[in-house]
Structure formats: C-alpha cells, structure tokens
Length: 125
Ligand code: HEC
Image 1 (cartoon, rainbow, N blue to C red):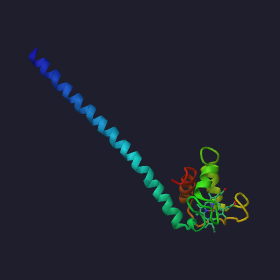
Image 2 (image 1 turned 90 degrees about the vertical axis):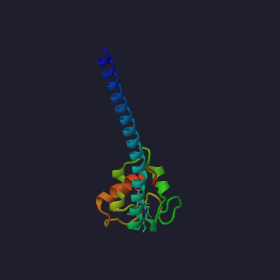
Image 3 (image 1 turned 45 degrees about the vertical axis):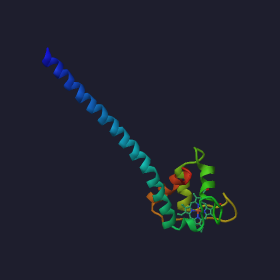
C-alpha cells in the first residue's frame, strides 16, 4: 500500500514536469512566431532597397510611383492577390496610378518578386 502511494506520487511528479515542459514549448513557439514576422518584413524592406524600388516608392508618400501604403490599401485585405502584384512588378505597369508608367522590373528574381508582392499586400509592415 505504501509502495503504491509512493509510486502514485512519482507519476504525478512526472506528469507535472511534462505539463510544464509543454507550457514552455508553447511559449517558445509563440516567441518564435512573433520574432519571425519582423524578420521577414526587414528582409522585404532590404529587397526594396536592393532593387532600387525605393528610388520611386516611399512608405507613405507618393513620389514617382504610389506609396507602399497606397498599394497596400488598394490591393490588401483580399482586394488583390500577390500573383497580380508580382505580375505588375515583373512586367511593368501603366495607367493604374497616373500618367507615369513603371518599367518591367525584370532584373528581380521571381522568388524576390513574390516576397515583395506579399509584403506589399500585407501593408509593407
Ligand atoms: C523608375 C521608377 C520606379 C521604380 C524603380 C519602381 N517602380 Fe513600381 N511603380 C512606378 C510607377 C510610376 C507606378 C505606377 C504605374 C501605373 O500607374 O500603373 C508603379 C507601380 C507599382 C506597383 C503597383 C502596380 C499595380 O498593378 O497597380 C507595384 C506593386 C510596384 N510599383 C512595385 C515596385 C517594386 C517592388 C519595385 C522594385 C523592384 C518598383 N516598383 C520599382 C515606378 C517605379
């Protein structure tokens, strides 16, 4: 009987350790996700710099091209798709925002075009 009770306590202890391990795992995953987002945004900002998009596009002000914010507002939240924006970046665009056309950004590799398009859809944050 005494042995049984000891055994019982032992099992409880293991269960408690497992529970706290599970809790810290969930916490670690949560932190992982929240760190991953800004990292991706910084990467996309770096791409916009690398490919000189920022010569014509600014975060909130229209310069030569529309601001990132205006692009996000027009196409974000399901109003447009990343594929649509990627096509505009790759092939160029005209007549959608004003008199000034955007030349095809053919020098940008497809994977980076996709990242930029998704980043813009998400509001360039
Ligand atoms: C020489 C100036 C210039 C450069 C460099 C430039 N853009 Fe543009 N961009 C424009 C102009 C002007 C427009 C508006 C075109 C229009 O009215 O359809 C535009 C429009 C866009 C649009 C909206 C297209 C649409 O379908 O409405 C996206 C997205 C975009 N640019 C992304 C980029 C990205 C990403 C880069 C860098 C790889 C880039 N642009 C580089 C001038 C530029």
